[in-house]
Every structure is written in C-alpha cells, then in structure tokens.
Length: 232
Image 1 (cartoon, rainbow, N blue to C red):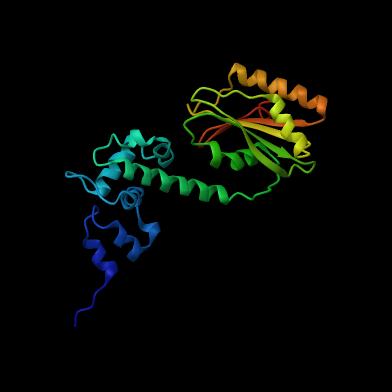
Image 2: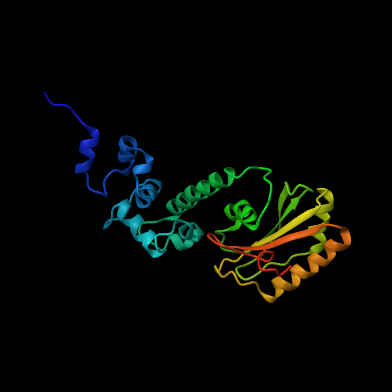
C-alpha cells in the first residue's frame, strides 16, 4: 500500500520549484527570502525561475531586504523579467511588512531613553530613500501624545520651520519634544545645519517651557542621539 508523505516529497523538489506549495506543506517560516519574493512576482524569465531571479535581485543589495525596499519601481524594472506590475507587487509586499512592524509598537509608549525613540520612529523613517523630519510630542510623564511629520525633503536634506514644531506642541499640550530625522545615506554624523536647528529649537523651547529631550538621526539599523553625546 502506497502512502503520500508531502513532507518527504518536498525534499525531491528543486529549490527553484513551487515555493507556494512549500509554504503550504512546511509553513511560511520555512521559506527563504528569495522564495517569499518569488511568490510575490509569480514567475521569472526565459532563463531564470522566479526563485533564481529573486536571488539575483537580493544579491544586488547584499541580501538586505530593507535595501530592496528602498529601490524604486524603475530600478526594480532593470532586472530582466521584472515589469511594472511585478515591481509594484514587490514594493507593496515589503511595505506591508514595514507597516506590520510599525503596528507592533505601542500607540502611546513612554520614552525613557534614546533607544525608545529609535524603536518608535525607525519603522517609519529608517529605510526611506529621502529625508523626513518628525517630532514626538510628550506629556509630563514622557508618554507619547503624538508623533508628527513636520517636513519631507530630498536625499540630502529637508527644511524645518520651528514655528510649526511649537504650534503643534501647543495644540497637543506637550511639555517635551523629541526631534528626529533620517539620513538616507546611512551616515549618522550630524551636519552643521542639524546642529544649528537643534540649538534654535532648544532655545525657543526654553522660552515656551517646552523641553527638548533629544534629537535623533536615524538609519534603518542605527541612530545618533544628541542627548547621549551631550550635545543639547
């Protein structure tokens, strides 16, 4: 009597074959990054399977999923076999993963150190390909009242109006703020303009009795804290 054992049969499959079936039989955690991306794109090209194409794409960004998510639709379409629809599917899938990670952060956490601020904002701005400036508004207990985008810029900078920063602080009845922006270049060193802006906002906050707790420069994996470096 012959019996069918799916778990055994899957071992006979080529690594480039049927990642969908592998997910059903062995679970989603069993799939490699390339196999998960292959499911998103569905098919490869004449010379490569979907998995092989996905491996090549990941190799081009040193196998870093965050780096793949930073590519534009046009950049993804440079890979033979990736059209506009497949490129959009890849970016949509990676964006869902980013948003899922963001939802894991408590909506109104208490900020007790620079790492807390990084964990709060890294899922939002850590892997962007352009600069964004955000402010976290807090109450007397350092509990987050609101986190708000103040400005959006290009790859090398973004303009910030201190009046907007403090208008929001007054609207939210905040007693403290944390500034944060990302550096798409991955470099954590604050620029001269970063230092000038920090000083200007700190001095304005002292007049309004709104304490500047920190200014964070964020990348996808690391951060720089003005407070930790005694630069406030």
